[in-house]
Image (cartoon, rainbow, N blue to C red):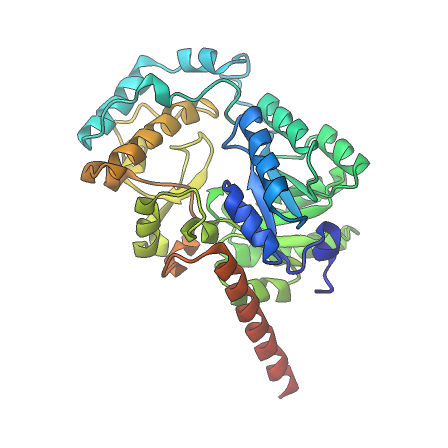
Length: 377
């Protein structure tokens, strides 16, 4: 396609696939899209292994990475520099509440083997370490979320000829990112899975495109949030976006890191079955709503913890929940959740990642052709 972002990153079709699964990244890039590996799930050592595997299997197709370097850190945790210190800062009340919640669904207590290891988690220093790993590989884009991309990221990327992307949830954020030197803006609406703002994609995308143009920036925009089909992608591009950044649609693919239990729940879910909650990371993130979220948002809750402490509570718990659900524990199955957007209501079946890309291509062409036909009439 004659498209700004395709030229920047070297892909054929401007469908960006954010995933924590290397298999999805490879499948999408080899099918003509652009796979983006999310780094937040890994330690630097694990991330190195994942990227080396991608390099060996992607056959030279372009791919990128997404890291999380929070711009702001809660003052309650700013002096805590290790996961051991952070774990020690979690109150007995929060630990007891978590155990009681799991007990109420028949989920066994979390063992030491489930704990988040040192070097993993969402903190500025870990994000920078992951960034350094990424620059040792032939990536064609690096993206950042949770604030302005660090100057060091932008400088190092531009030295290597790598475009920098940034996720934003408001037009003022987009303007700040463009002023900082970011090359691609991902305008992510509140429908999106994971960390997101409150403005709907259909409002945010044209607002960001207009604001950047009026300010004199030529920064291309990718639309994100609730986009699960090629026709939606075509609609966003009709509003000025240069492509789509999708995450949730890949969770229901055969290659995804998600469990069979979660994929089954995705197929059965409605758009209203997600919730924007701090109960997994400590910052507002959209995910499939379960009793976990109801409990943490309820009157008996001790309150959610700031990032990254909440992740030290939730991630071991969800690993235990998944393990119990896989063993046939029906109570655990009720608690199974993951980051997913409101587009989950459009998931009707589990497909391969390649099939998703092909469906996007065909639906996009059909939608674009329909618009042109109407203009012709």
